Image (cartoon, rainbow, N blue to C red; front, side, top):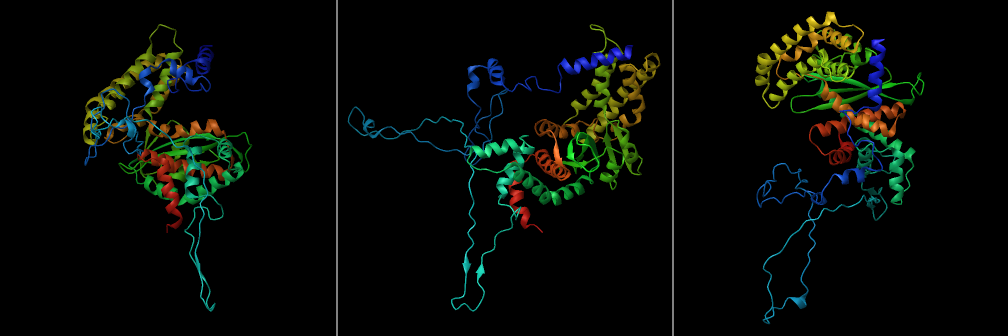
Length: 466
């Protein structure tokens, strides 16, 4: 009865309760203007424009006030609109012509809407005046999709609006239609899949870089594929996400697979040797038993189970679940304090502070577990922490290892947000293309690159690459 009651409370909280992982205004599609404007002031009528750069220097002329919103990039193009005094008003009352002595400058944020145009490739042809030899025609530069009439820049915009902005193809079809261009969504879909095939070699190179990582995060999320061989349209397939990469060069890799079995991580990472960070899913155990792989478990998953146990407690009462959340919070507090430290300094902090905190937490666990009902929310949280204890403490062995799998979960989030808009993939080819494109764009973002500018250059240059 206690177990059923806890499940009812948690289900009701998921349905009606506030979520810390969800924006308070998320889902307010029709009243967000009124909602957001109601809490603003007239000061917010002005957007923070970038400050001018000092002549000959690469830094702003003045430092923005502390606490102010970050300004727009200083590299934004400036377009001067000159307002001059009429010639008839430039004569002084004393009768002499006025001379320019300065100017007042005010800046206004502007935007140029999307422009759809047609590129005409004109290839010059030259022939022999005597017609004795074959004519010569200028070659057409390699194109990203040679059998289509989509330019590299058009493909870049198509992939950005779908995979970064989460805009389904049918909505982008309407956007193009407003500009007087009719491109059926079926054509857009073929271009997306073609772009995925074109970008596949970069996906392969990214896997090579991923396998050089000292540690790799792995997680998976569901995706529905309507036309997968041997599967019902309503069944779940999976997008497997791996993050890692050499120091300072993060890699985010998506891979589609129709199943969730242990053979999938074995296939993806069979050549990897190093530390592996996952949640408690048993499908990773076979890979973790491979020689050379050190398996770690995620503290964030442990903490969430105790947070759920807190939710089912009687209101106003503190219990063992609160104590667990506080002790886990101490571990995260140590990590925050040494966030910007070197690996050696972080290792010292972990050995000095985290190891004793973990010892205290383990002693508390051994004392508390026997007196708690095993099937209760608290009992399940305690058992989960006990079962994965050796993996949970591995992060203290080095200074560069992560404490949780949040890096991978954060990489999955853009995919999950986009999935709410496009809902499913029609074919396996579409799911594979999505995996490749998400991988490249999320890796670009992780490395501090503006995804559209980066992808446009890639699609322009990749067709000529060897």
